[in-house]
Length: 104
Length: 174
Image 1 (cartoon, rainbow over the protein chains, first blue to last red):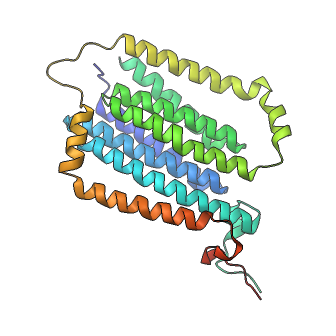
Image 2 (tube, rainbow over the protein chains, first blue to last red; image 1 turned 90 degrees about the horizontal axis):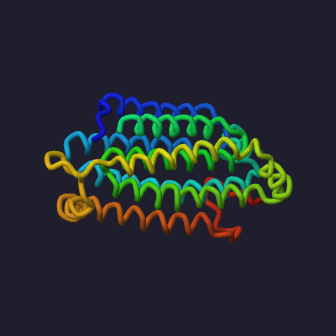
């Protein structure tokens, strides 16, 4: 039986979330930013699983399945947008594509 | 049992750091897959075997394959150089060692798993399914609508015709 204190488990999830946040803030490549968002989604799901085990209820795992569905949609749309951005601007650097419209 | 949790958690954190700090997108994605596998082992240790399987199948299997396809589509033309670099042992020795440690961790955890204790039992997929289709039925239908919208949006954004660019990306025509 796992006897790791629940605080340690939450701290582990928090570290993963922070790593994702750092990646999102530091990296300027769109693919890496989407990956960082994935990491953050995953750590949020991890907290749900920890809570489900703590209270011995299936609800947390149900929530993880919903997170999975949302993540799948987000990745599909995000990658389609990345492809469009790359075809149009020939770059994946977000600093190069910060204009809402083309300059005259 | 605790030591297995700590090993898997350390591998997850280490490979996530490598994933967000790498320069090559494909290498980072490989580290991210390793991180997801490590988190899946953590799920298994947290008495959630169904979710651990979903994590491997959907995250590491489907979502990461999407990422890899897109990254490879964007890096067309670099294959020969990349292949030469992949053959360099320094590139794959660290992920291989981490993955081997993770595999040993999982096997040892499986062998040392005690029989199910009567008091605190594992949540079975049956309970999850019953909860999903009774208590959370409305949420399931909302998720279905979301997936439908995602399919239509991805189809619309992914179509290759010049005229159907997203309006944010529409080139100034004249």
